Every structure is written in C-alpha cells, then in structure tokens.
Length: 324
Image (tube, rainbow, N blue to C red; front, side):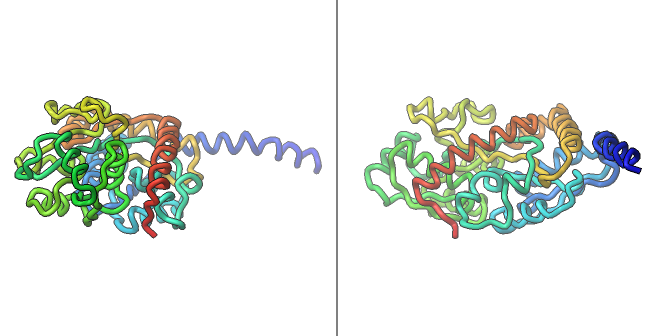
C-alpha cells in the first residue's frame, strides 16, 4: 500500500503540469468576459472593443465587453479579483487602477499586486496641455508665466480627481513651480467644454478625448507630456523641448486577470492579445483614435507598473493628495 501511495504522490507534480498544459492548450474554450471600468464610449471602452473584436476572430470565441464604471475603477477591479482565475474574466486596468488608487485611498476593496496579475500593456494615451482657443495664451511658456505671476489665481480642469489628467497637471505644477487650483469634473468631455468656453483656463487631456476639440479649433494644444512629439500633433512641442524636464504622463491601459490565473493561460492570452494589437488594421484604428499601441510581455508590464508606482506614489505623498 505504501508503495502505491508513494508512486501516486510522485505522479502528482507530473499530473499537475500535464493538466496545466492541457488547460492552456484548450484555452480559450468558451467566451471571454472583458470588464471595462468606465462607461461605454470612452477611450478604454474603444480600446477594449477594437482589440476584442479582432481577438474574438483570432481565438474563435466571443469576447464580451462588460462596462462596470464606479469607485474610480475599484468596483470593476474588485469584481475581477473575485472572479474564477481561469482566463475567462479579464479587466482593462489603467494606472488609476494599478498605480494611483493604493496611494489615494486608505483602504481599497482589492490589491493591485495581490489580487491581479498583468497580461500586457495595450496602449498609452499621452497627456497634452490645452487652453481655450480664445484664452489669449500663446504658448506653454506664456501659460506658466501667467500662472506664476498670480499664484493660486488660475484654475485647471481635469477628468476627475485622481485621474491621469489630474496627476499630470500636478506633475507639471511641481516641475514648473507654479500653484494652480484643481477643478475636477465627471469626465473629460464636460471639462473640455468648460475650457473651450472659457470657464476654466486649461487642462491636461489625452488625444483620444481631446481630438475633436483640438481639430475643431475649440482648444489650443500647447505642449505634450511625452518623450517625443505626437504624430497627430507634429507641430506641438514636448515639455522637454521647452526646457521643462520630467513632465511625462499618460493614461496607461493594460489587461489584467485574477492573480491565481495559471501562467500558461496568461501567456496564451498575452500572445493572442498582442497579436490582435499588432494586426495592421487594429493598429491604424488605435493610432487614428489617439492611442499609442504597445503590446508587451507580462513581465515587462509588471516592471512598468513597479516603476510607475515608485514615481507617482512619491508625488501623491509629497503633495498629500487623498480621495478618502
């Protein structure tokens, strides 16, 4: 009896490895639920639906986008964390979900590091400093000079407290040594409308949200918070070109899954999602929309999240920004 038990125990690791390999080989064998923590129609939603459509074709299974806004993305993140760890529930997670929230809230209903596992960074939405077309502000230097002249007298809008748009402007404030007052909105669209109308002088916005206002001449783009100029705005300089260093900020949107998802399943999912991102038609749609397509490995995405956490947590802590 002891001999048979010993053989059975020795066989367990082999069975587990074989079972995991079989699971990944069969994946996906049913529809994939893709949770988006924002309402339909925004940048994250567009990214999921554009990639998801091609992903569905490539893997031969439906990809069902499920919009779950609320709690500064925490509601969707917590729901994903509680889902079965089998690769059939995925989440579009931005830097608010994975980086900012732990520093902005004393308690969260999920842990980015313990409850969620990175699959890939899907795309970047670089931030752009914009002002109203009739503001009389001619350049980023002019904007900063006016803000410095009367500290606290200039307001700026954002898509919401704790959003990448908000923290990008806080980063600019620190690097350019100016003091402005934050006016948070419920989304980029109403914030842009008030910047265009002159109710608020400026904001940071991504190209995906701001393209219509910029191309329509309602707001003026002054500088981009990116390492290089954006292909959609070739005449707009980077902050570094203007002598304002270390002002680089973007909404980073990646895919994550429940933390206990088997590595083989994560790798299979990563391979399929990256292939969908790199499909020429998908890349063109993303770029035209204002997204910089990425598609990296789980390890590369995890390393990026660690670096971003170090960078932004210092800023949030130093400025004592809290949403509790």
